[in-house]
Length: 222
Image: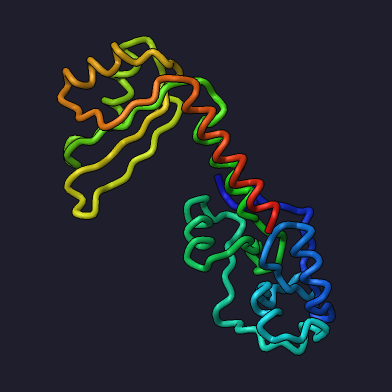
């Protein structure tokens, strides 16, 4: 998944002649705390809600702002999803601008866009069970994990891998298309995998969906 497939084209950029009052109104309408300033498709920089409130001059036009052009986050159309997410996290953004190969502004990606994609990619709404495994890093092989699941008549819907701080062990969380896990767990134990946690009931998916919906409701209140 790359940036150009995630662009939200409903959020317009600000013009240099726009002021903080207009920006704050748009931020409220679109549930974001950042907006790009663009002039003739040239990305000039991001303005945040904090920038406007800190200046205490909401009627001042952005062409009078001293935008730091050396530190304006953006991604290009072909930037991978994980790099987009890293950019958002490192810069504490609610929205990240997207530029084309000619450095022209083409749109923006919001946190909601990213969350929606991750919900689909993690098979959040698909029924199934969750298994959390831990193993030495040198033993990790997703192909073997998938083979164990498939040997029990199930399939891996999604997988997430996290390394421990010392990188000696890894944690692998998989979602499979079945809620009855006993035979799969027995096979993992036979292959000497450490099973850290399991969630075999549909209530787990319901709880995750509730938390996901609650996060969206929180973002919509901002």
